[in-house]
Image 1: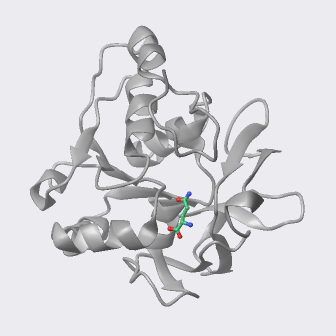
Image 2: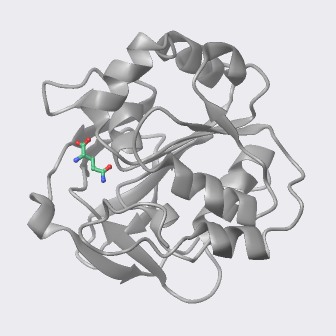
Length: 220
Ligand code: GLN
């Protein structure tokens, strides 16, 4: 059984069975996942595996107690529309100003950006970067590759890119966390804000989620 079928024709490796079998008893609920659209369930399963019981965020008041929020991959225009319909935009921006950590993967990265090359959607404007949507091409140009990521210990990280956005400009406070062999940034961080153009939630390697939890706790 797979939890989602939308990953360019391939089954998602994270399954409820795996997560429930291996998950330790959850011990934390100050991490949320924006659960309006996209692959929020995959992020939730990985977090459960790491012993975190995340909040599925759909209401502004749920953000109040959070130390960290993940904005998942999906369709950024739809997610932005829903974010406005659920009155979450201002609330997320306010919590970010109060130093809540936020990680945006793919569509989430688009929403975190200060500027987009594209006309839509209107991003949250939080992270000092310019992003271009679908910049690696359409669905058929989706690809997977192994990346050496200095912030993660051990073997290369298998990165899945699906209609991925590109960083086309990074502010001076933004550090590159991962890049392709050609030197193009594919993950970046500005303080407690983290953006990845790929989808760590679609693999069975949980090191990137662990890294985000360390950002939340201020240990990296
Ligand atoms: N291309 C999508 C967008 O622009 C993002 C794709 C993804 O999250 N996998 O919203």
